[in-house]
Length: 386
Image (cartoon, rainbow, N blue to C red; front, side, top):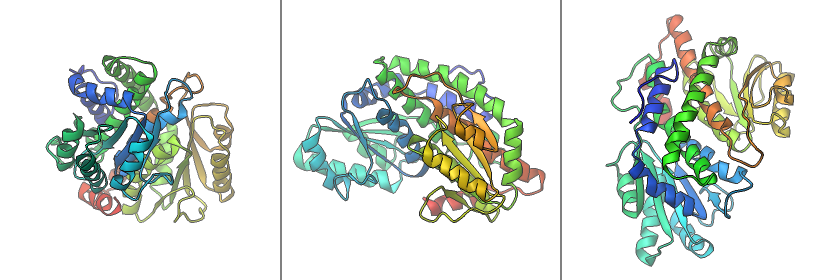
């Protein structure tokens, strides 16, 4: 049972923590062991839930020691061996000894992971293959997706927003799926770290509790900071926003971009991923948010230079105070971490949490101006973009 003490001044962050620590160890253990044993993990989800899952699982690729040839793929990867999960299953069956279809869906009704699960169930039924298992993190244990995943693997229930009614106090409720998506990101990242360190499933919860103290401190230090205030000053103006990073950082950028998109579109502006297919040239006054742990990624530095050339403002989220990106940027948030090269990093999860209240601050500012966007408007933008 979660300790009721608060780790942050922001209500939904405390709710995320409590929900993660209330996950039942007995329910998590089978998924933990399946993830530990799998030599191939296929990720399934939609929108921010998928970005959350991808960000966590990408830590496997970043880690250079401790894994035994574990491969992580998604249906969007160029090398995915089929047009569907059913088509790919036969090839995966030949290549790997243990394959886990790992899905993340708060509602359990998202089409993409549901179709993947149904396709894999069809293959298993037709071939009687014993190499596959399914894992699902969801808030809806009775959903169609949970029914399929539970038959062929493990369903882990982690609460999301629950019965909280729509409210303009987003610092308490989060925006739509914030509570679930941030919770699964943290839980999955700590599962990866525990597996990397060869720990038992019990230690996952200890790692989570320890890390939430760090996250709460980071959020509180930044939420009322001058940097955050300057960001909101820019966001409430008629500006477009660009977000970018490489690898895991890009998944975190996309998580942030979805929520900012809802708010900025409401204001008549737009949000783009850097180097996206529809990304226009920036304009003077636009804002760019760039994430890089090292602050030395050449593509990210190039994006920074381009935005600066157009007289825009760059916010750097980096783990290195003296990095090139930090020095080039107009604003910066430094999330330092003492971690050995080639081991899982907490930087990316911390960055997701630190950036998550940014739309909340924007809503608060708009409220002070007399503009209070109802959540059903934001939900409509959400429904037509995912």
